[in-house]
Length: 455
Image (tube, rainbow, N blue to C red):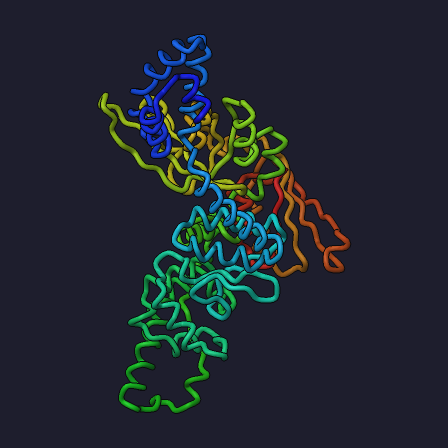
């Protein structure tokens, strides 16, 4: 700043105006000072091109510059947080997650960083989780209050009634909660996020049985309020809670409900089973593509599961859409305009997995993406020729047979995993079988199926 003042021959008062414009990032004031600065510099023998170049550097600095005292304070905080992350990484990441517990994008980012550091982030659990993200045995326990639709009051109540005695089963859970605090919306979110999985891991059945849970909770509360024992005596307290019989959610449906409750895919991602195939097709992950854009790339091919689509009308009267997509490495946003929107709207429904060709531009606020074309992931995967189903015993064979009974164009194998996965026996099924993402998703939902691979 002092050098610029000398070059332009500014007085102290004139330099102070420029200094304030820079410090407060006042663009209009900076622009107003440019002509005076360049003219003053030229009067002092500085070439116009050089003077304009110097002022451009000052303008860029004004976008992020601040006083030395401010910088010193930031440096101290940076040192303290770096020390905590280096020496207490689990506690540091848990605290960071708690600080951002209302921002699912930040939670997803910090969770990925924790996993990169080798720190396990446990799924939500009504028996272990609390209001905030916590630490236990070198692991981070997911905060129940960070789930959508649950709320701190409901979680505090759960923690209070749980005390030092974990919920033994679903009936025990229902009898101990207050349905006026842990309501239907909260239970839907807890179930979708997997927080009740250790009591019953069939989330479709749990969701269908919410009214029965709330009914038992209400009866227990009413009986306690009047001091009346259960009509059938103490033995009734040991009776299990019977849930409706319903078809289990397919893997994709289960993950979509999980995404709605958590804000991102937590236990798995719909694209996980396609990762190897997508790599062979040279479809980039979002993390890889973002880095390539920072290195100068302007276009790429990405896979993603649509999590949201918002349409709006622009000044010309045409429609545009902002589409949120997700892959196993993160979430990203892309836009498309009227012609492309009309052509690809049906493919961009939430829950659909697609492959998109995008153009990209790096901007100060982040990477801007524009969708050029969209293909259904099913269409991209139409060339798949093999499906392999991994099991540990014969229990799931009937379910596997059901989903592979139709005629198709590919080959199917069942791999029996022996000795805790140290040995495998592959049995190739006769005939041609359907090899599609839908079949793979249905097979993954079969009880006893360990893994499904497409190739």
